[in-house]
Image (spheres, rainbow, N blue to C red):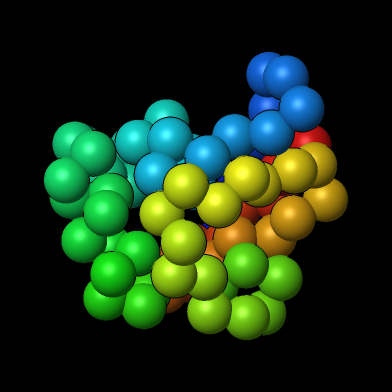
Length: 69
C-alpha cells in the first residue's frame, strides 16, 4: 500500500517520518526499525536514523510504501 506524505520544510528526518506516519510510537521504536535494516530508501537499505528525506524519495518498510512530496 502506498501513502503520500507532505513534507513541511526542506526535509524530514527518517525517524521523524516513522513517528509521523504512526509506524513507530516512540523515537526508540523508530531507531530499532532502522537498526534492523527494515527501511528502504529509493530501493536501497537506509541505516541512518537521521537521514534527511526530501520530496521525491520513496520509503518502503515491509509492505508499506511512502512517497514524499
